[in-house]
Length: 469
Image 1 (cartoon, helix red, strand yellow):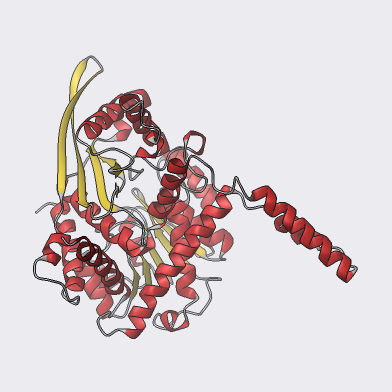
Image 2 (cartoon, rainbow, N blue to C red):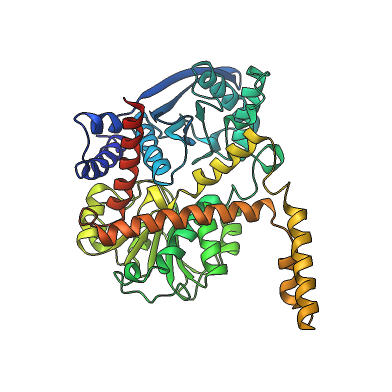
């Protein structure tokens, strides 16, 4: 049985456990669980003097709300079942975060490192043509975003290919999210998933009854953190936790091994080293061990798997020592691992919440593209003027000058990135509060994952009921 099939089975089992606790008409749970449609494409591109055939997929798990939303990944081991599992997670994630999207996902079976940038562009544009031709790419029906192996450059290639096919679509830029800020994107999108993980952890530490379950001190300051994967998400959450919250990143697990430093790794230096060498070996700021998987089993306060699915399984779960696991990747714990760790009292902040920052900020970008106006454009200078008038009034009343240290931040109106971070934090905190209330007040929810699924599935069922389907 392939890993994609196992992943899909795990997602379906987690869904079913929650669905069994919700009163629904007969057959509705099965309808919500199954993937609505999957498009399989095999297309050719002439490269390096010969024709190469590529296989790709785009799944729509649910379009109870439109458009369906979800990333596109490029990976040599991508497969249909993995895509359908990720599409299902997107459905539940969007419902939990109360975003107006159905769930979708796409993949191309390709190793991006094996091709030059101009070749990848030609392959991507052909893939985009196939998706658009079958209505799996459009601002109103299906909106991709970056995922593993793709980035903002990939997205602008797709957006441009769509615009050329649909020159009369005034909303063409909204056919994908995760674009460069200079080409219709939004400030803060690159950091969004990592920033969302940080906000999730911060809100957990603000909730006394929840943090008490871990036995950890009620402060992020000084907490030891192990991160698996220093890609976009792992890098940003490591950077934010260490630089802004006072955490120590004591180990980073990468493909070639694990690098450790009990005093805390210099994340910027490690990221630069990784960019040059392709791995964490020989990094001067820590001790390297080629047995990377052992890093997951290091004693630490917080374990953050931020790379691939199924890295914590029933086999290694008994050796995991962290009292708190935060799923920054999709599906990093198998169903068996989740059951074993939950039985031991390990607290797990689940993927459909923890890594929802990316799709949340993608929602902001999509709205920006549809309205054709930047966030903050109409009010920033007006807010600045109001703040200055307020400060002047306070100075006249008190006879004191406004503190220089805080004056600049107070006087400046909110930039787009400030508004994006504010909106993201609000969505993450609101969703966590709903999950926590259910976890602490409803016997049906023995853990945060079940609470998240209960909220998500109840909302989806409510949509179907309202539609009369």
